[in-house]
Image (cartoon, rainbow, N blue to C red; front, side):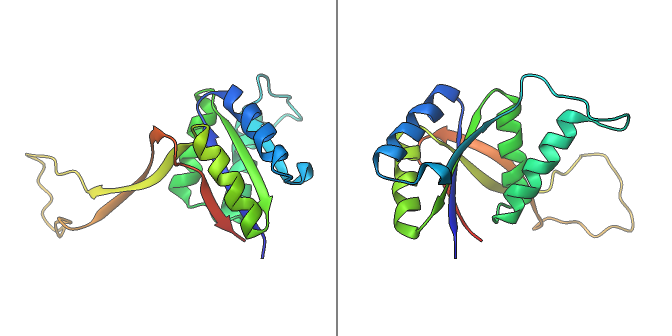
Length: 153
């Protein structure tokens, strides 16, 4: 079963270094790729929304390899802010080595954060059961390093 490691880098130059270091390990070059948000989007038709089309396609690909919706949203937000993604697909051993390289070079940690639902004072909600213990999930990016995520698909 293929395995993919994904690293989000705030500094796109770090992606180039990661790809060089991963290739130096003997990782097949055709199984490593990078992605940044395009600087311009080509309109392909009257109903084309190029940025949305790009983000939708990326979201589909990330979900296909096992990323959660909050992770996918965090990756897309990272690209919007000028970051870059690195993908490496291969065997367990190859992908683990690629993940170590990404982490060493500062892949940011994307995590699903849980927290209780906000309670708004003074807002009457008569027929609604309070959700005191309910959890809300949102994508968030933490500090650089240790953030390469592994997906099996």
